[in-house]
Image (tube, rainbow, N blue to C red; front, side, top):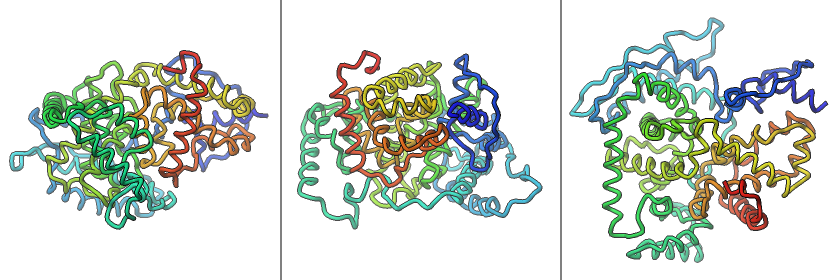
Length: 499
């Protein structure tokens, strides 16, 4: 019976493993499914790790214009005035998009776009209205999705209110103030003791000092205080030289597929958070991802890397925004501030990916090894869960591929990811090795719910829709503590656990 359920489930979801369309009724048959015999088949069977929707691809194809080009001297692709113009276009377009659907199908004029041109305005390159329409399409699609989703609870984007010092927040406890003072003391020393900084960061970094601490722990900034400003200036200038040198090539034949995929994925990045649907923010992400991709040809851009920019972007933005970050208008910031946030996000994301790049090279061997290691680790930690998966023919790859590819970012709210990354950056090989134990602890956390599911379909639905929407620092702290316990207990694990 379990085999029948598994076969029928996969046949109904041939393109998207593990996801069950709400409007699809079961169709039972006895045809045996065929296992993937090549990497390409494996890739096709796991492409739901990023929640791909075909209709979005088609919409992009209707608007993508390979003729777009920007002069090499580009410093920014938008201005505040242009953002306001786009906002006006978006409002009318959204009202049209949300109108009751007709039976005649979509109007092709809604997804077609005129040739994109760039004009010089006050010495800056400004996008024409056709690019505004491209961003409008993404906003319309996102807003339409939001109509059918439940209302999200109002929880701060970076952390719960107890971890903030914004206006209206309760005063810090004595312990919190003591921790903050300790961080400030470490950061103010002529040569910051990075080992001591990691020790204090493991249990969470106060919001006020998180940006500078992340820059230091990621290896972006030196421990020597006197050199930091010089290094920041040099690295930020270097990033924008990359923009001037490479960004105009995004529509060249060699790079257009990469640029197209980035352009499709960016609107899907945290689609329920208005901050990430702003044209100014999406342009920043587009430049970061494209420059990273062409500077790392061994992997290029892989879906999922777009998620890894967001924690850095939000943390560095938090230096300038204390309230309502989810709805903050990034275009209102001074241009230099926007540029600094963008460059810092690029370099810190690059440092992270340097340690896990085998996750994104051809055939993604890093992820396959980590999923296998998770399976063997869970078989030692909790034999009941492991045998339960075997009984109902659930393969770890079907749910843990995304856990490894996106570092649990699709399973946890962004505020939890930021807290989690405090520890990852403090832990030796946090993103590559310690993440394995966090995934194991995360799986065991839902032990009761997993064992209560007695069919293949129910198990995968649970594992891909775990209820963490209300999680905050307390829940993440408990998860990390359990992960540390598992790491300590299974230190004798075979060498492949340490990959």
